[in-house]
Length: 320
Image 1 (cartoon, rainbow, N blue to C red):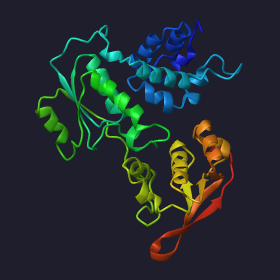
Image 2 (cartoon, one colour):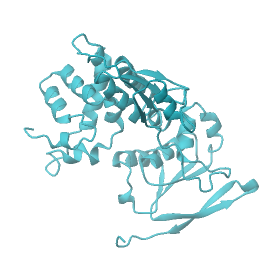
Image 3 (tube, rainbow, N blue to C red):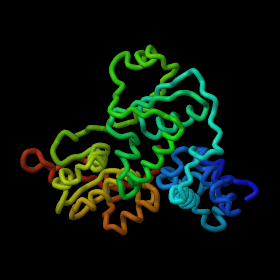
Image 4 (spheres, rainbow, N blue to C red):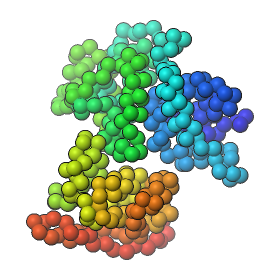
């Protein structure tokens, strides 16, 4: 395209119009360079980004034909770069910025912290990244199922961040009153806080048989599949919600051996905010969908363990 509305539709500034044009001209390294220089987590975005609502929705082909599969192209190019051994920030032509005297502390090694650290290093700042968990990655490591985004891909992304000169200190929580001030007292010129949203709406989560999505997905990525699987194997599982996280939980429950998995959503099937491709994958794998249904409470069995879910049927009405 002479005009590239897809690039304007990319909130990460990856510039798909440019990397697609370079790919079309068979400039593979140039295409890969465009992605990684603009977006240090370009590989993760190629796999996980809701492209159908962003760059692909803005694609010039929309309404005439199906849009260009921008996410798939981006994923292919980043994977190809690693297969080729092409490390953008380790190439001799990569011009490193002059070092600055200021240094910045980044708290939280999730997508926000990793991206912030990379951009600061590109401007010459010294960066130390503090992460409370044993491994960096945040939601990419602990909140996305491995069948969607494997650890091998994540390690490649983090390797690119490290290659810029970012120091990552894991198992180094920054918490408590005055913690940020202490970092400033140690000589950091500024602090970026990107600790994520790991809390959930507890509701009745204290009772046996109920999981919060963040705890459930995190446990699977921490190697606790057997422990979690014992609570679901051979049983019926209900997942409440209609977004991508809910679909991830439903598909994960099936993989743990659940007999049946029901996804309960208060609005219609067409209004589910999860990506269409994810929803169809769940359907193919055997997830049952209960749209227009609102949870109204649980049915308890022995020792307060949940044995059922009460639902109220809903209907769509005018927005208010």
